[in-house]
Length: 140
Image 1 (cartoon, helix red, strand yellow):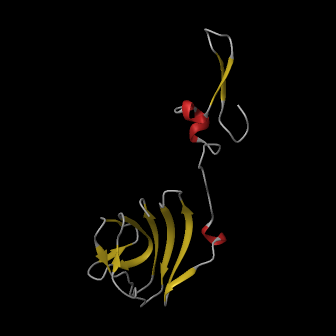
Image 2 (cartoon, one colour):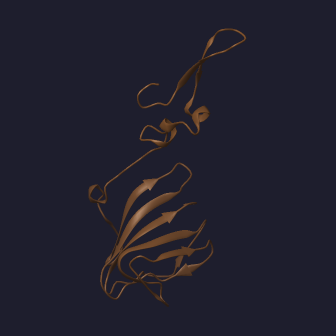
């Protein structure tokens, strides 16, 4: 195995040639799941500058895939309200309330709550007391 790239050498029984298998052929191999796996990424929230989306609402993009999927941490200051309806398109929005109390314009969700907002749905994110959210957009 090469460091940083999971590869495996095997002799072809018919020709005796040495064949190098890519990481795709190693599904289930320990290297496939570890830090050397293709696409494995990590980032500290503290290393990402916040971007203000609306007054009192900031986002920190942690990861974005080639297909548009992305993960972010959003902070909503006490009393801040999203500027308009937040429509979920092209895909769903997955929300985990890390701290505080999140309100979607109708209901309050305390820390530890998970929400799935399907594609085509909408809400008006806000928080009376402030909150931190982990957001995942599997389809961008």
